[in-house]
Image 1: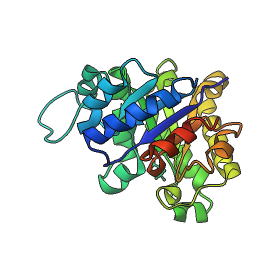
Image 2 (image 1 turned 30 degrees about the horizontal axis):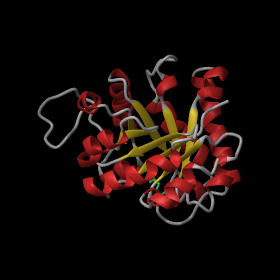
Image 3 (image 1 turned 90 degrees about the vertical axis):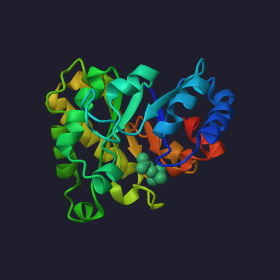
Length: 249
Ligand code: PGA
């Protein structure tokens, strides 16, 4: 049985005092769930969030990292820096980073390798554009993203990787993939993992759905056979909504 994982992606939102208040409110409400609850917060909130989430079942993640350990990369933050303060997860290759910050499948691959070397668990985002879906190329596009992203990642390392299928046309648009479409795509990703590794690894890997997940649709999505939870953007900024999503399965 795969564990359900609910990860909030706050994007460029929330000041430290807001992060602290949010985590303090969330803590008692999710304390009895067996689901893995993760909040991926801006760099400036990481330290405060880690302190506030100490001794709770809420895990803290970052939203990006550089693949090099250190050096002349003004404005960047490395995996070892994240690890040093106690961060556990890091989102890699979110479509907004690919779209606005020129990330490619190749840089995503380097970041995943570096995250794993630093004992961080990467949440690797993949997903097709509206055009690609209209041309019925979604499986080809996503399979290709997975292949390049996981190039060189060993069978033992892959256990610490989470994949998030996020169709770009569904992110922040209010349009959600139907539960059935999302489940089919996630099955196709699992199939690709089976080809790249083996069936056992494919049956164990956690694959999330992301893109306009809300309290109204989370239960239906997360109850599908292959969907192991969600990566939640907008709805993770409201503590009541996020709690309902965390407890919907
Ligand atoms: P959304 O964002 O839930 O606001 O659509 C999801 C994401 O970008 O991870």
